[in-house]
Image 1 (cartoon, rainbow, N blue to C red):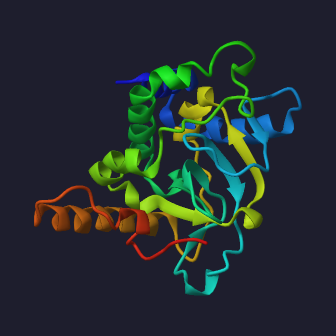
Image 2: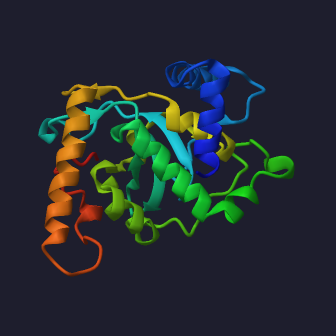
Length: 227
């Protein structure tokens, strides 16, 4: 058990249950955004920096008519940026245990680089903390392939993102617990089922061939890409 899971366990004890800790974590974000002196979740207009987490509204994708559903309130762990889109893993689309597993494993893997951002003037300051350049798509494939996180990879046009905020590394345990998803065109239960189906299909495909990580993952072969 790494840092993220340890903190989640402590929060669950503090609030009396995991459900209450989830509710408190979701409430924390809106309160932090409203508080002028809170630095752990702050507005930003910058493009994605790899390895940082962003929360924003995305209510009108230009491909909306072609999408069976999309999330209007993404919480995205940023990967690379392309020429005109920001790319990342929308954590809302992963069941809570998978969100926790991803962030716990990533924090453990990059602990030194992350904790270097938790000192001095950068401590719990989301805007001052630097991203993790090493967290590119290529380096993230181990997570995408092992746990089926390719299901949640999305692309976003920067000019269509509204009210974007960046979250401090210290707040990752709260983000792992919080529920922000606002799905248009489907229920959260349906999304969870699609995630399970995607995982099953993906694993069946991989078990039938001897090759490296799936090269289609970045193309998000669940056929529901935002842009």
